[in-house]
Image 1 (cartoon, one colour):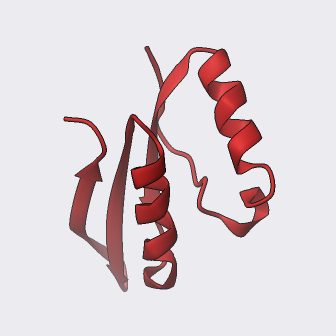
Image 2: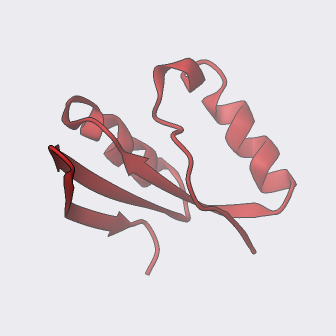
Length: 78
């Protein structure tokens, strides 16, 4: 099992190709995705992606100056 340990499949630039990109990754042996959410306004897209994939994790951050607080970490598979 290979893991993409830092992807942003929720970014708008991937909207049209997201399904094909995920299929290509799965065919290449990448079977788990870790998608950190970078902006509060798109957390809903990260959650939707998490629900769509069989094996994915997401972390949701809130940035304050130089400090980073982890608010939530979710996984579609335990």
